[in-house]
Length: 342
Image (tube, rainbow, N blue to C red; front, side, top):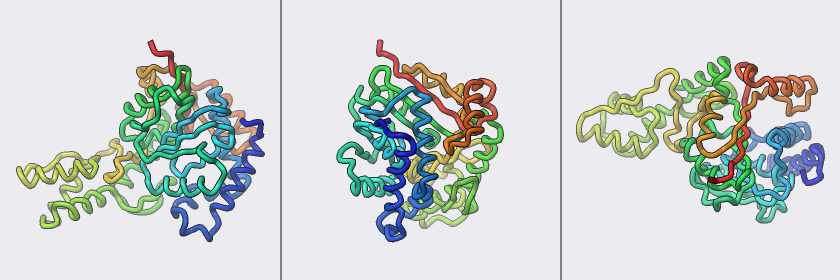
């Protein structure tokens, strides 16, 4: 870890974000930065985040020192910055959110990272990064949002060097019935509303209303309100291009589209195409990843990044007992090694 302790790395991270998160910068960065990363202005918050990344690397037996890393779904970039502070030679931060990457780029331009951190506004399925040039691909709390899981796994297999590592960390553990219930409550709220907080998320506009707005503003402003309402309800899971196509078909044929929300269906943002939160059963996901040329292990995760010795002990035991403990775990980890091509 660049010969720096977790404590030293935490102090460096805090120094950056205590400046970035000054109230005077409210107009310079996206407002959501304070919501996502407000805790990084304190030493305790920065230490927890650094420990979290260090634990992931330790689980994968991977040192970022002098390595090339792809942060797939980097958001505002805290994890990418930590990996650079840990000594990574190059960190690629990839995301489909322009507003997040604009803020991330503004942050790294103010600090001495040079070209060690570079962002790309693109899908994780088509990063444009050279084949066999990356030592580690990290998907941190991101895989549940990907539009095309298989496309991501193919891209990870292409960009990784032989024996390179894919690390997936996610809280949507579908093997835990309590997590599954909470996540499905999130699905319902994001699709149908009302606006407001739900299990750590904020609904600003239900997706059915977003689809209704797209329909009204693009191609159906002259249709009766009840017809627009029904079209919005019957284009569940579609992105803008598909919504427009479905409405045009309705206008030409009178055939109403037939894609409706139902319990157990994960909603999709009609504008970005991202899923709000998908559920994964880690054992099934691990088997699926093997098909793309990886040796894969999955692990239960119970926490411990805050440093509580008891929780860290419980996590160590739970990880060792993963086939049994996964049904009770709050999250999961997957470590996949890219096999030598045949």
